[in-house]
Amino acid sequence: AQSVTQLGSHVSVSEGALVLLRCNYSSSVPPYLFWYVQYPNQGLQLLLKYTSAATLVKGINGFEAEFKKSETSFHLTKPSAHMSDAAEYFCAVKNFNKFYFGSGTKLNVKP
Amino acid sequence: DAGVIQSPRHEVTEMGQEVTLRCKPISGHNSLFWYRQTMMRGLELLIYFNNNVPIDDSGMPEDRFSAKMPNASFSTLKIQPSEPRDSAVYFCASSPYSGGITNEKLFFGSGTQLSVL
Image (cartoon, rainbow over all chains, first blue to last red):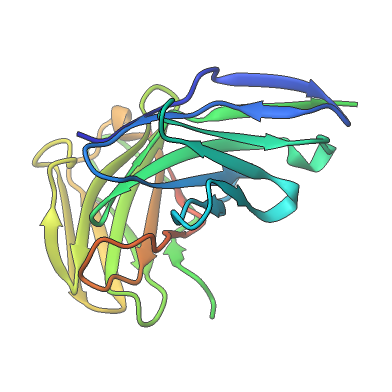
């Protein structure tokens, strides 16, 4: 069975601080992993996806995620938070043609 | 490309009324998904289609919900009769699908905010 767990429904950081959003997955097959971002009143947009070509994946807006098989994790990071990063972030695992989303983490960025 | 188009953007209705949500996927995409998002349950997959055929509707909450995809460019999600607990944001998403296990992403519409009074 496939599932995704996101630790922390709300994360608050100061502008310029490191962003770390956690995601752990379970998958019975090699996983395809994704991070999506949702801004208020909008649909989800892809931030980055794990393609198995490299364990460190770079996405848009300075975000990156590292796939760690031993820890079954795919945490999302950004070295320096910007006010515009305030949004909800979803980790997802794909099995065949079905996506399983985590419960989401709302990121608040304080000035 | 205009992306995935959903209508209406907002829908307010009274309990017991029929509600129809509409979706136009990205041209050339042959997989279409309906999701529901609530604070309590997060993003739930309701149903998905491949090549206009429903593949998995195990997420449809009950018989009041039905979905159709009469052609490759249009899908509807209908709730009849609607209830207050159906209030949520409903997203449609599409994806190209090659028939195997791929890492193709989902493209989401902007959603329909449904309020059932």
